[in-house]
Image (cartoon, rainbow, N blue to C red):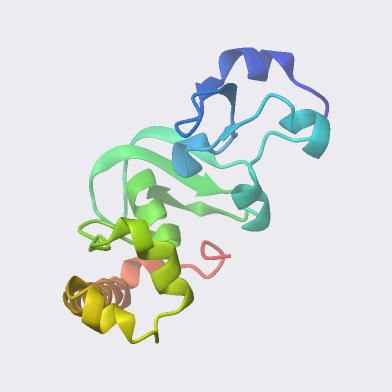
Length: 163
């Protein structure tokens, strides 16, 4: 792939974390990634690590088509390995990332990393009483999320789409 200055000019984006100007990943509509300006010089492409690892290739976009899963008329995409199965961006994200809405928030952000590094420490029960409630809420939320994924058969219609 050769450097595409026109692509770079027409696809400027800003990283949400650091506010730096960069270039949108070719699959930005799905991954929301903005690449640093040096990315092409290092990787030789306009795909983020996530899109490269998942081998999504260049997703094709079609405006105003009905999604066969949610039946809404939206922007749909297809993968190069499965162009016969269009899917809207929202359903595609659910398929690959899962639903994260209403995810319980850890009640003590200042010790969150420490907690997840050593969950068996007895101090969590005695000094941080909301953790027990959080764990129950998290388990309930995860069970419901998993149930929704398992019952949404249409998201798994094509094994090529899941690669």
